[in-house]
Amino acid sequence: MTTALFDIAVALLLGLAAVGSGVGDGLVMSKYVEGVSRQPEARSTIFASVLIGIAFVEAFPVIALAFGIIMLFSKGAL
Image 1 (cartoon, rainbow, N blue to C red):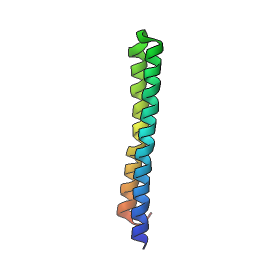
Image 2 (image 1 turned 30 degrees about the vertical axis):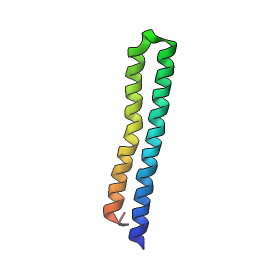
Image 3 (image 1 turned 90 degrees about the vertical axis):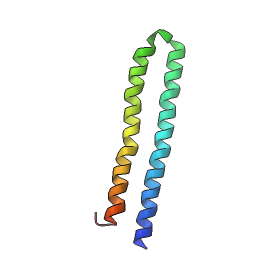
Image 4 (image 1 turned 120 degrees about the vertical axis):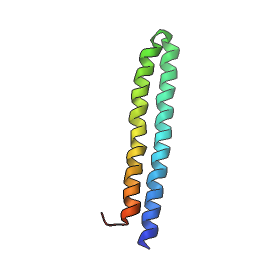
């Protein structure tokens, strides 16, 4: 029973992290397009900021993946 609960917890952790990352990436890129449409001459400066923002957004699912793997293989020994 506890094995199934840990498997469900890991699936929810990874699934919600992926959804959150997708929403975050979408918001960052939509603001990038909006910023470039307002000031096309600042495209390279805005793009550098976008890359940093996407790196922070994508760090969340990688950390969630690490926690998920720890939960999956420890099976409650935490």
